Image (cartoon, rainbow, N blue to C red):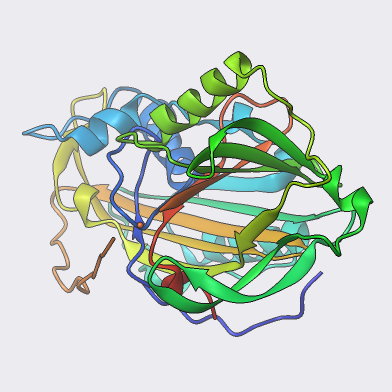
Length: 331
């Protein structure tokens, strides 16, 4: 659907959060890949909850396994774990090339030497690409809060009527309090809300569902209705320091440490459709291994509307974001 582009990792003042239940800041994004590898760490390797001392809220939320593979179609994700080796690295590269025609942006960041020590590597990739049946209208540059010359797409008086059928109104209380759903010709739906004020994406999404069920207004997008959505494009890559370098035990009593954890989220949305690619990787090792403290710093900032991507008939989204500084999500 789109031509290739060079990867430009810009931590664009958007913070990656790890679970739907984690508290969100302004300009936050979540994607389920890290949850997939955490579930394998907990259920397949440790075979018990991961417990730090002291325990953290982030890990408590990850242990809930709220998001799992039941919320995704099998053709949209790939995951694996095993002993780190060049053979495992090659297998992952081969598998994601065959399944998604993609290359990894994180595998080179990990140590793949087989040193004979008790280590595990966990990996997941999620890839989605969806198109609208009919293109929305490219609108003129307009303001977004205090920001000028923002790119928008949507529906105005010149838009073909058939495009309106791609929009379902979930609820509308005012221009500052509404939620809509954009339908695609794929198995994905785009839900956009404005006016939500919850602490985390899980509560926010559940509130949207509740309000939608209780809404008795018009759910069709009417002839005099207008739609204006900012184009979005961001590439994120973060080292997940919250879970690194802390001891925990497998069910056999042995102590392990997460040596390194990374996640990427690439997301774009425009008048034609959208694309998501996310990776997560984690190296787990026995505590006798010396920990590499050469960890790059991360820089976070703040956000005003929220966006969720969900597969049809699934109970939870696979991506969520909250955006207020629009300059960080446009090229």
